Amino acid sequence: MAECFLPTDEEILNATSVLVRACHGRAWNAGWYHDPATGEVIERNMGEIFALIHSEISEALEGHRKDLMDDKLPHRKMVPVELFDAAIRIFDTIGMYYPDDIPALLEKMLYNDQRADHKPENRLKVGGKKF
Ligand SMILES: [Mg+2]
Image (cartoon, rainbow, N blue to C red; front, side):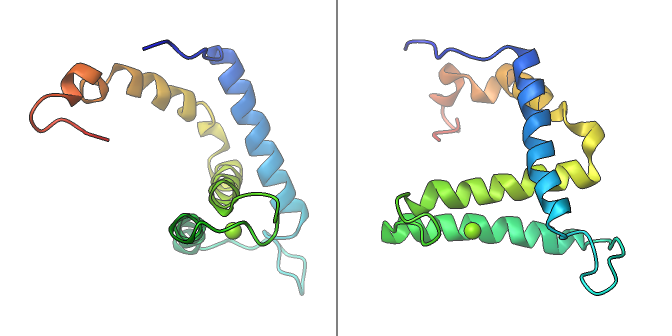
């Protein structure tokens, strides 16, 4: 199996920071963290935020199940657009509530790289992860 070219750790950290700022900055500027009547900052409900992220994944599932084109970007398949909607919400949430944890994406990738249960030879064993 040919290796896929990977970005450097520094590139991953920089890209994560850019995506978090791009997603959270847009959400902030669009007013999603302010009361539209008073302009006061509101504390959003984390359960609601997780449900909204999940709703984007559900939309991707529906797009896959019906092989649909996206309704907002009709030149695109629905699956990637909805997966990116989920990513936008996730990066926004990290930017608002967990900005100090931006390096966690790279840290989790590096951790996953070392996981025995992610190694192809272990995935072939009885009880190994098939997908
Ligand atoms: Mg959506």
